[in-house]
Length: 105
Image 1 (cartoon, rainbow, N blue to C red):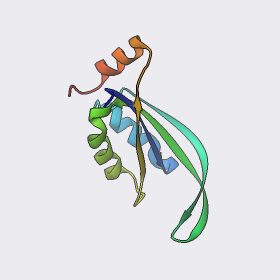
Image 2: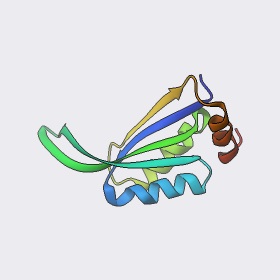
Image 3: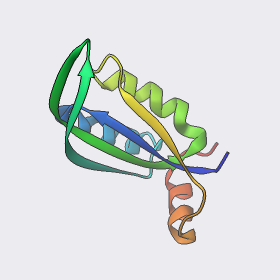
Image 4: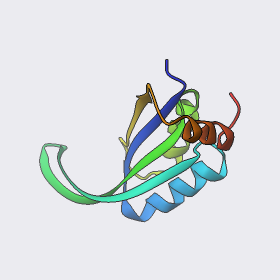
């Protein structure tokens, strides 16, 4: 498994900053980008259109379980989207920064 990852998360707009801040504060993430989006999906048999936040979490693959646990604690969605996107290559100085800003594993 590659050492570094970006974790893609969707959440309610009102919860995005709290989740991002918690992940960085606990050194589970070096950085979290918060983007606004409109999502269209089917939920419980009905079409839904919602405004959401997308979080891109810059971290290490080994921290996924801890991040998933923290997001599930802070996110009000019963089935939050939390996806690990493994980084196979990246800019060396940036990856060294991610390494230094996240928990040792």
